[in-house]
Length: 245
Length: 245
DNA sequence: TCTCATTGTTTCATTATGAATCAATAGTAT
DNA sequence: ATACTATTGATTCATAATGAAACAATGAGA
Image (cartoon, rainbow over all chains, first blue to last red; front, side):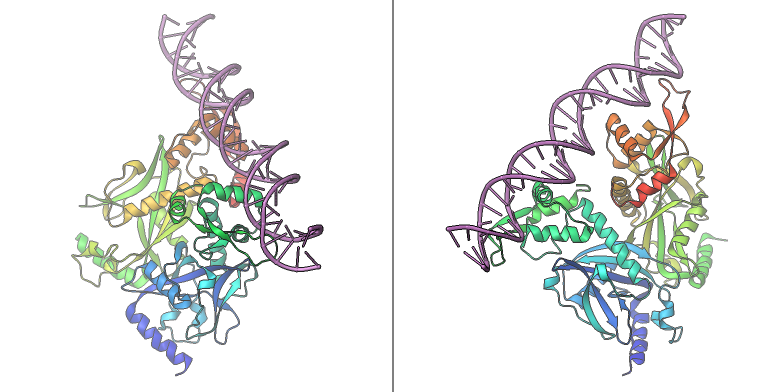
């Protein structure tokens, strides 16, 4: 079956089962090797990359739809999700399907809701969909050319994430089960885009009282073995529920 | 023309000119007499109140549509607007139009974008629409029963406003051209829902350097005449553009 | 065993914050 | 007129948070 035919087939399904005019785009953040990354797809035959996204089915809530899309592209469930913006300009995506008939689902006008997700990158397996040939983690500080307004959507998500970081703890969703203090600090530095003083960061995090120190340090690396920590879920959630730090 | 007929007539217009499935609800905040208020409408024959809202026309951006809705209900233009959330649950509003045919525009499923607006309440004239008999400022701390999920939408807007207040200046859009320090403090206290120490508030605001003191104080009240201030637009915008205070 | 880079923790100076105080003043009562 | 009073303007002092730096601890490798 040709790609064109498949899109037309899907168009019919969406016209039947999905809610018109509404789409969802997910900015999936992961953190690995001191780099903050975003999960991006590259369409077959295209140079530019795009965000994993999709449509809202008639029997789903918006958040259910976002979780479904995330699950399809990453296999991850129970993900931290946050709706950070709405992108409702004219001619966001319509021109992308110029070659098709105007009745094509994809060629309609869509208002897209931006959700960002925070995931443990090491526990996620990126999966291409039938229209893409690549699905990869790309660093946010070296984003490639992106389709439509997806570059703007990523930037907006990043701003929203930074604001969240300024008055809520972050890390539970982005780090593995156990981690070291330098790793946590590196995560903060990467998201904020600035260096932080080691001692002050240590003191501040300790005061938040959201970490539980494990008995064993992480041995094996050169130099002093750093302590391993995990988050105290209860305290972490308590901190999350407060409006300000 | 009966009300029912008019709704059916409007339904036809919306089916033709509006974008399906997408609606907009505006939480318009105003401040007057030490009270933070929200602009609400009451439908004819209903007890409960609702937010000013509407639909997105095919030739508008989302923000244009929000501004149009605001203009129709308040006459105000060049308003501070912020998209604070998306409400996309199932059965948000469909059941409200039970009495009508399923093809009625209003009876479809809608995902609504929440915009909050900050306005100088004294410079705004609330205007009813053809389906409402009242359009009034009601205090946020004594909200009446509200239709559908509009109560949740107001609460979410308020939380978003408080977060904004914690790292951006606020007041330019909510206060008259000139105002006194106690008035500004009262605005902050009202939004945050807590009392603030007078001297500390004074010191903090002064350090932000966003106020210009006028030559004349506000005479006429009992007791000491307070200084009048206006915002230094340039400094205010600079503060707004910074991510954190 | 020694060295070294890194991590863990504390110290000290500076700045911000909380609470209280003193000064100024416009209207009010006498 | 004069004193009084409630309110506003501004500052002080104690306390807490922050920034910058130092010292201590330690595991790997020479």
